[in-house]
Length: 359
Image 1 (cartoon, rainbow, N blue to C red):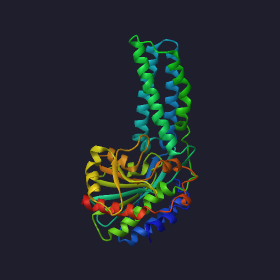
Image 2: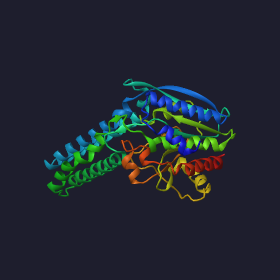
Image 3: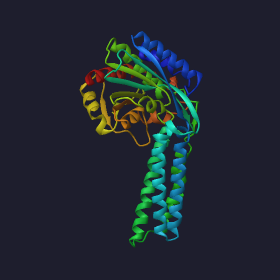
Image 4: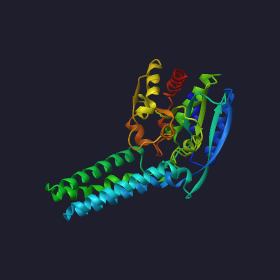
């Protein structure tokens, strides 16, 4: 079957973590990967749904309260107290975010849940892994609004830090500037606070498209024994599946595929240090008719490659899209009506060429 054919099977309905529709989609992936000659193994794991469901809203609420409190002290001409509120608030948010994105996902006792990663190999230890997450989610606000909110909130906090520091040095800070930060604090934080998780998005582009490209790449690679395939679970809940799968594994090379739209440039994204070799290989592994770029991940966007990179892997994510893509991800509009799968064959070819270049 073509990559677009895989997309239409996988992207027809939502695949929330733990649902029957996700299990059906996983069974389809098992069938396709088995036909390529892979030994397919289900890897169950346990995780906490709390960080993935509530960490971002809690962090957004903390950022709003921090901005609000510092603004109140700033208006009252207490810059030292404003600076203290900002310092404590920012450090607390950073520590909470680190806990939620790492230890909390696997070890928190709240909202314990089960997931299943699908591993397909032709040899016990592949040199390169192709990765794509199968689960989907919906949120009250699209990912573009969340990213914009995170960036705007960070700018507002940085501005208040600058204002409080200047006031401590005797520089006159207009009351209107503090009033403006107070007035803007809720509007910019609200998209972050409202990122509550549901199961009302078909998740066609995020990430039935990435899995479809992975399946097509597996078919194209034929009997290549040095490439393995991971269809992960729980990515939308704190990268839970990738974090569980990587436990106890020797660091390797992972080419992740997440969100392939019909329009926009193909982009390899990752941390510059860990992904540099992949970037070099990806630029060399050209595919006719495609333009490929490399860049760091956008603020507020997480992929399975992040979890693997944090575990010492060389990892990067292949994606394709525009701002319009970000505007419909995690919403009801992320369905097959808006996605034909026109970029999937090229995405699969890019994965294949990059994998071969890394061998």
